[in-house]
Image (tube, rainbow, N blue to C red; front, side, top):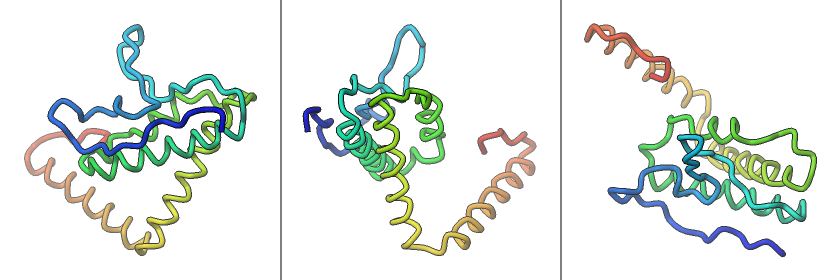
Length: 144
C-alpha cells in the first residue's frame, strides 16, 4: 500500500475532545465556519483509496463506540453530504471503501438483535419523548 493509513486510536472522551473533528477525515475549515466531514488526501490508486475509506469507517465506528452519547447527531448524514459522489477518479475508492465497510459493520450489529423489535422500541421511545415535550408545553424539534 503506497498511501499511509490514518493512525488507529481510541476516541474516549476528554473534556476538550468531544467533536467529530478528532476523526482523521474531518477538518475544521475556518473559511467555511464549520467542519468539513470528508477531507481526504489526494488519491493515486483506487485500491489504496478503498482501504483508506474502510479504515475511516472503522474510525467512525470506534468514535461512536467510545462516545455512545454522540449517536443520533446526524454525523453519517454530514459525512455523506460532504462527499463528492461525482468524482469518477481514484478518489471514488474512498467512499466505496467507507460505505462498504459501514455495511459490514451494520450487518454485524443486525446479527446481534431482532432489528424490527429494536426499531419498534426506538419508535416507542420517540413517541414517549414527543408526549413528554407536549406535557411540558414545549414544541418538539425536528431532530427529537
